Amino acid sequence: MMTPMELVKVCPKCFSTNVGLDISLKSYAQGSFFNLHKCGDCGYVGLVFPEVDKEGLKKLRGRKK
Ligand SMILES: [Zn+2]
Image (cartoon, rainbow, N blue to C red):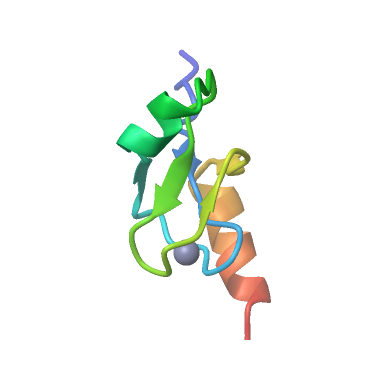
C-alpha cells in the first residue's frame, strides 16, 4: 500500500513549519478572496507558501547555512 505523502506548508524565508492562516479584519475589508498565510516564527506573510513533504523539508533545511 502506498502511504500518501504528508505535505506541510513551509515558510520560504526561515523554513519554519509554524505557518498558519493570517485571518485579519483588514483582509476581509479589502475583499480579498485569497487566504494569506503567516509564518509564526519570522512573521512573513504571503500567498505562496511552498508545500513539501518531510524529505523535501530536510533538503530545504540542509541547504540553509
Ligand atoms: Zn518564517
